[in-house]
Every structure is written in structure tokens, then in C-alpha cells.
Image (cartoon, rainbow, N blue to C red; front, side, top):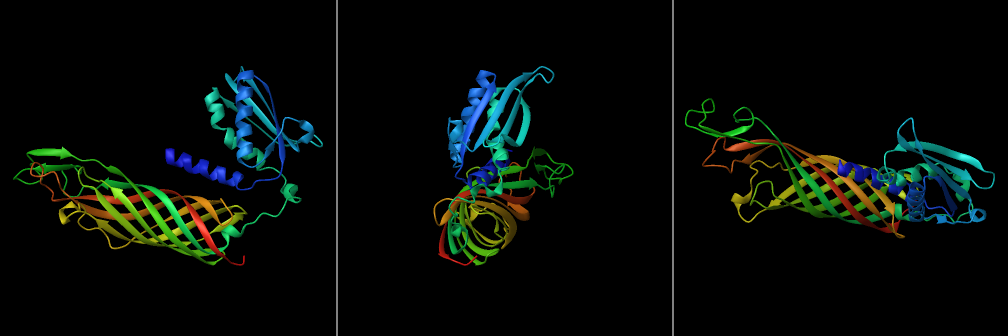
Length: 340
């Protein structure tokens, strides 16, 4: 849930921060003093971060963010009503409201509220502004670097286990075990780094060669460094000048490094694995962008050595349904401009 929330927050941030406009705002609030000052400050922070100018002089502003905060006796909660108003003719562009229980809950949504307000600005408000350079998203080559934090998901399979979940000891077979130890599913963190070289041969299609090194510890005292050499076919969607959303498919060749052969706990690791993902990149600098990436690789049924013997030697292998969910944050540098 934390990573889903982070992904949504990252997406929202890109969508409005990626489109800075030469616009001056004023933010005015009324109602409960404690809530008004806190939310006014939060909206100013969001406006400045998104590239807007904020003033306290109404005559200098083009748009006014007006809000009220009052306690609603019927709902037994505080009610927040906010509008985006054009200063020149006092016309209301958009208005919204929601209820909240306390200040912490109200502040949690300040960024989303600001995004929803400013996404309703007329498209022609930037006509007089200087044209924005979007060459960063139209390069022939990109060099990508990122920090990766993946999770290995091992879903226990019942093959050879007592009751579908227990390893066991006994001479009379699985039907009459002497001792049984239950097992469970595993979620294993895999921090690492990733380097990639991306060739954008069409405006809507590119191919990336990537190398990723990760550290994993699926069993105690069995640290393993793994590498994924992958090819990704990517489809950049350029709906916004300063944001690129890129879904992609992956084919990867895994390699695993350990001190000796007995350190490898998987007995039938596949030669190739496949998956997909999505990347959201926002302009940062003249020739590159920051990106957040989420990916999924499915390995399927895989056998792990039973390392619990001699107490529980059966079965010799424990089967899991294996997949990897990856999260990456990084930067991509572009080289050689190409035509749109």
C-alpha cells in the first residue's frame, strides 16, 4: 500500500509540476483560523513547487484560489470548500468541497487539491509565454541510471508437503510423519542498482538494453547477488510536453552469483524470464528527466533446496510460485536530437 500511494503521489506531482505556467496566483482563505493558516501555507508550497508565482496583492494576480473551512454540524466534520477564480471578471472556473476529521487529514490532500484546481486552467493561458523546449523527450539515445528496490514474492506450493504446508521427518512416509514444521509464503526485499541504454528509433517506440544488480536473502545466511540482463520494448506516450508515460514489455536473462555452489538455494532457475512495467518521466534539465518505474516479472514454479534437514529432511525440494515486483527511481540523459 505504501508503494501504491507513493506511485500515485509521484504521478500527480509529475502531471502538474511538469507544466509550469507564467501565472501569478493569490491564495485567500476564511473560517476556522487554525485550519485556514495551515492550508493556506500548504497551498503556497505546492504552487511554488509547481512553478507558479504567489502574491499577496490581488491586483498582481491572474487567478485566485479562494477557500473556506467551517465545521459542519450535520456531518460532524469540518467542511473545506475551495474555488479557482479568474481575478479579471471574478468568474469561477472550478469549485469543489470535501470533509475531513482533523488537520492532519486535511493537509494530506493539499497536493491533490492543488493539482485538481490547476488542471482546469484554460489551455490558452500560456499562449503569450515562451515556447517550452521539449527536445528532452525526443532523443535518439538515452543513458538511464536508477536505484531499484524490488520484492521477491514466493508463494508456497503444496508439492510433497504435509497438509500442503509442512516439511517433515519420518521413516513411514508422508502419511505418518514423526515431526512436522509448517512453512509460509515469503516476501524478500532485493535492493539494487540499474543501468540502461535506450534507443528511440520511432517517436512512439524504443528499445532498451539494461543491466541490474540486486542483493537478496531468501534464506538466513544465504546472501546472493543476482543480475538481470534485459531487453525492453517501450512505447512512450507524450501527452504532456514535460511528461512521458511509457508502458513496456521485458525479456530478461538472469545470472546469480554466490561464493560456492552450495550457496545457490534454487535448483531450477529459468534461463529466461518475462514481464512488463510502466515508467513515468518528468523533465529535469535540458536533456533529461527524472523517472519513477514500476515493473513485474513472473518466473513461475521454482524449486528451493530444503535447508532444514536433518530435522526435517522431506521433501528434498520446496516448491514456490515465484515473481518479482520492482520499483525504481532514477535519471535518464538524452543524446542526439531527433525529429518529432
